Length: 364
Length: 253
Image (tube, rainbow over all chains, first blue to last red; front, side, top):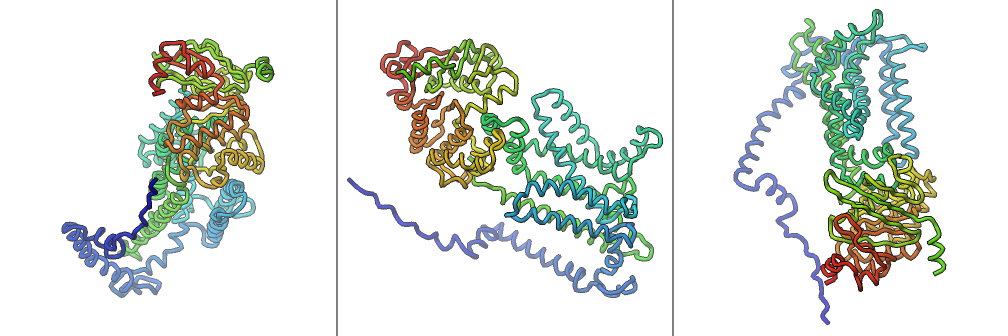
């Protein structure tokens, strides 16, 4: 009988690994790609140095008024002087510590959730979700011993974050329920969910906000009025939940029928099947879509200008038309873009991290 | 023999009486009558589309029958969700494509239902899970994800997962059909061991060697009907029906 001797593994040829190989395959794989690479380098050389010149090297950093901006570059004094306003809007100055405290409570409270070995994480998370909103509302709005700050005084980045966070945390669960309802076996629930989703997806957000502030009062009994911000928040949640529902439904449709059957066969009822088996997989699949919706929501917060609320963008815009500071619109908008970008990029990076973390080997 | 007689006197584990089922206009199950005694091991075979999978999927209501009566472990299957869930607790199922939960580790796959359905404390559920993972000989894989295992290993985990619910009846729906040839044996060995422990088993399979060694009764189905049933030696060596002979002639070269 013969015994086969297997050949030992050989290292790959040197041209297929390393820097040179990378350059070759990514930037100079053929004459057309080499040309594109050179063109791109030219564009970078054309654009980046002047941008850096304006924003950093020639910029004005110190001073308190426009007369201090003598250099050719950006006048960051404008942003510096208005920073508090950009952050808090018209929130009374002596009470702004309450907003800061809320932000710190949010960050410190959430931190344990990101410690991998933390025991009873689910319980802690649930408690956080119940306690933090109450605490945040009490700190920012007041009552029970704190001076009340009406929501019309809220503004700037603080308002943007309030709308985004409330919008996201309201739209997510509602969207999941709508997605499940749309795939329900019960016709009444299905029709209800489809109608809801198609209605809210068919209406522009601006219209929703208009209706919430202008038309809703007509339908309410005399003397009864809702807070303007609350109405906007409800409108945004309902609007975004319709989008979220469709994203989640995409994930649900990608789960093979065998998963439903296996979950049913071990005796899990509908809600446990969904909560323990189907949704964890479906939501993981649609993380990119969910984050996409969140980012869109975050940027759409600026539309609350429609009902007279001043979010980060609007408050910056207001500052640029202030006669004392005319001519610094570019600085203002660059700053607005930077802040929005930091938050959106943060969300995007976190979602990528989450996708990697939740990846559990090859699909069958 | 006396043990078999004792079992005869017990209530049957499964009763199917005049079961009919249609997919739209298509009549998949035609007047199926079947009784299974506790501890009995039954192999269902037949050409594809003959309704054998549908038959066992009706037993835990993954498919709904439209006519007739199905009683499993003394509980009649109706549209009552409580009864369906009660039956599913007592009936384990193993699928052709394993259907493990890919987002959970092997151990979590095994403890999920005992913890949430049987309300077993986590530690106890893990103990039970490790016991059955040892029985299917993969305790060392407990903390891996299904995606990191071979097909044969995944199917053995699926068997362990079903056993963790301590079912009275096990259903196997072509458990080796999706496996590479090298891995069929390890799964069949696990099933043979399970059969030797006295589990009531219904198994849809094309593994005729398995049927011969393990089954008490082999059932041949075609076009939604039970054509012939007999104990394996009679079934393979002396089939009574033309259709059965033809089928056996095609698969036993």
